[in-house]
Image 1 (cartoon, rainbow, N blue to C red):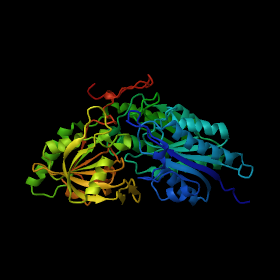
Image 2: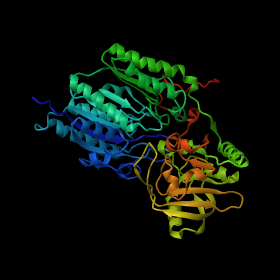
Image 3: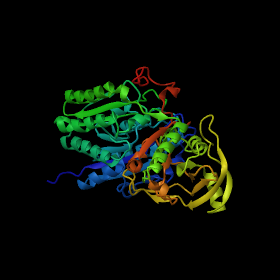
Image 4: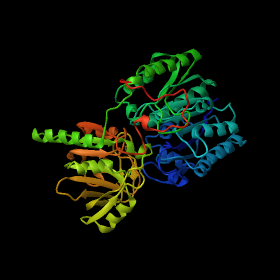
Length: 518
């Protein structure tokens, strides 16, 4: 008799919640079609997600290779900001739970073999500090404990004990920038396939790291994360009983009890699972003093970039650009994307051949579109949503380029994805003393691909200084064309110095990292 074809319900619900961000995240943000697809339902999920570097995309393609039957519910994502509204959470989570419940209880479809969820792991709703754990709890209330549930998560997941207990398998991104999202979905498929093939659940182990890890220090291309993730990937290859090991660095700008890093493992025996998780935990703890980053002020970063550019010019060599990351106003971590501290530093220090991407200001973008290419106008740019002390940048500008804000990414993280950031313009600051340009978008967006510059006619390698509103993701496409990368701490909603965060809910068993000098 032919083997039964597994039937799997799949869904995705993504949000990385910065509880310190200025605005909450309503339902409309999940419907929006921007860098990732807007909310898709039913069979449209398969067509929309299969080509993309996302967890569900990887799971879909792995399932197709084995001819599994997928029952897609929905997939959605919203740009990181503050709490998901109760209305948004209930509408989306409610639909996922209700539809899976209908499939599970349908006498015709009662042969459901498992559930796969593509989630982030750091979702905070207005009424729940643990968005993913709450969704898993509701699903378990419907399908019980017999049906296996596997989940893929972001590297920045604040993995809670509730999530660990309720899921039978968790796989987590191992790269930041996240170039392995689809691979993580494939690994989730492999875990679920093992459970279905062997009609059993693996032993599992979970440990929380006793300190928080700042976002800039989570770069997996640098020490100590590089070595930690090399060990994570090697363990299942070296130890036959170990099925999977993963390390979540956590998402620090979340004032919840379970904020922080953690390790999870799955194995054929409890001892193997425990030993694998503990070996990664010990490596992380031993490296505590190395989880630091060299962060400059805006003025320091701009002056250093100008010095490097000047030295290259004096040597009469074609130098690669210096990239400055505006790490604390990163829309990809809940920043407003409209603070102006780094722009002011460029102008005040008379930077030359410099560009900043991007400032979110739909009003200014609309004014420039109406004025047209080549127009000159006074603007009060940005500064509308940042923390206290952030102000608009007032100056005269020339409109150099006007676009519809649509382009396709070519960097490894989002390759092939069409980005839609609304009417977008390139402006030059009118000044005889500096040569500074700024890209202004109508949608809040993290600059993580060279396509953001090419959109407005700039070839990135021709710039001396490129400033990006991003913390680490920009490295996936800009690192290869940069001579230096500098991290600048301007005011923003994504504080990277954890001592500046006013935590009120953090559990007593986790601490701020101890620096090498403390």
